Every structure is written in structure tokens, then in C-alpha cells.
Image (cartoon, rainbow, N blue to C red; front, side):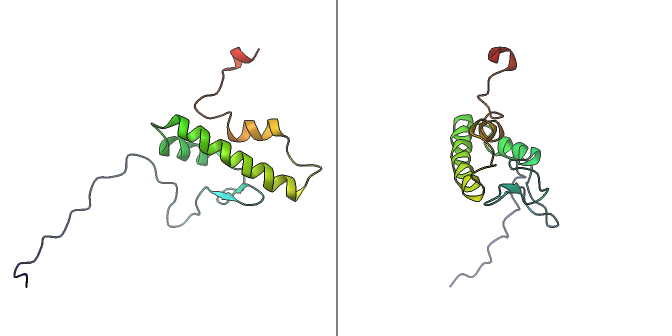
Length: 111
């Protein structure tokens, strides 16, 4: 039997990135299958979700791009099945999901 009480552990370090959710607001995550933001209703990824993703994947740019490309594929599937005639096109979805990421081209390169 242990005769001494162990000390209570400290709280630990503060996170080095912003938290995406508070106790009073929903997270900026996609509401599937419409791919709108749960918190603000804008098309996901909204500006807040982009900031959170950039902070979360700060040192892993390639991983962020692969993750966003996978989500773009899932969004294409979901949005096409919801409305195959008037849904966003592939270029629009690429711009929305991947083009804002770390490996985007500048406007000068595109012209």
C-alpha cells in the first residue's frame, strides 16, 4: 500500500494555436452533405476554418494540401449527388478547397 499521496499534476503548457471552438459557439466544421460551415453558414472552408486549418497544419503544408484534396473529392461526390445539374464545377471546388492552401500560385504566375 502506498503511504504517501502523489502530488497533483500541473495544468501543462498553453496551446500554441487558437482553439476553433468555445463553449458557446459551434465549431467551424463542414455540415455535410451541403458543405456549409456549422458555425457561420458560409461555404466550407470559411475564413475561420481556413485560419484554424493553417494553424493546425502550420509545419505540415504537404499534409494540409493532401487533406484538403481529399475533402474536395468528398465534397464533389456529395454536392453532385445533391444536385447534379446546378452544383459547383470542378474549378470552383478546387478554388474553394485547395487553391488557398500553402502551395498556391500567385496571380502573376497565372497570367
